[in-house]
Image 1 (cartoon, rainbow, N blue to C red):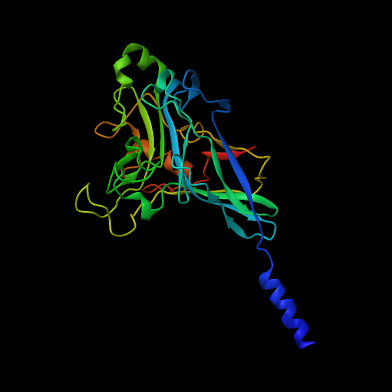
Image 2 (image 1 turned 45 degrees about the horizontal axis):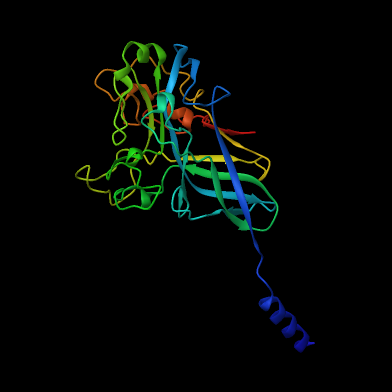
Length: 293
């Protein structure tokens, strides 16, 4: 009997490991439910029901997990493709450099690609943002996609986790130069309204110095989609509800254009809470940027 148990144990140890299976997680960009395109304008956005065109639409996601049947969180091992994915971080890029997104890039990326152990999964979790250990390095020496300086503030603040930029159609028509901005800076100009999410209140003596400890406002957004089914569901990124309480035709004087996550900027009062983040005295609400179908 003892020999039988030993043999059975040895067979289990020597048996093949559970095989991995490829998984793709598709994302799509929408604006109030309409498909996003750089060549289109979108009406009735924000508290002033403004018609806008988009200048940019990109974001970082990280730490994706699928949820197994027993509730276990199973990390998605991202394909290290040398372009869009590195470690557990991916850049989603919905702009294609056409139309009002002329300062963008023609390449797009709308899918996470990786592997998980074979099994049944229902549910998806991930973060919007770049993990601290990767967030405050030198983008000029970082691997792709973290080498994209258009998605970077500085070493102290790190990356722009979300870069969604738009401008009122009226302002664009009156002054085409109003929406011109460098790919490196990406901070817009008169007539532009920017939603840039990133870490703030990061303790470092200079902007060119990375912080040695976590920022007071890490501003990484936790997303949970318990009904996500791999191979069937699509993740939807739609900023319309996030900016519904903001007047996209106005900006508080002496502040960055739109909401760039910086403390005490009133233009963020109704925006960051709808990303699921507390902002100053405004408590976090349900995050409204991400859903699924």
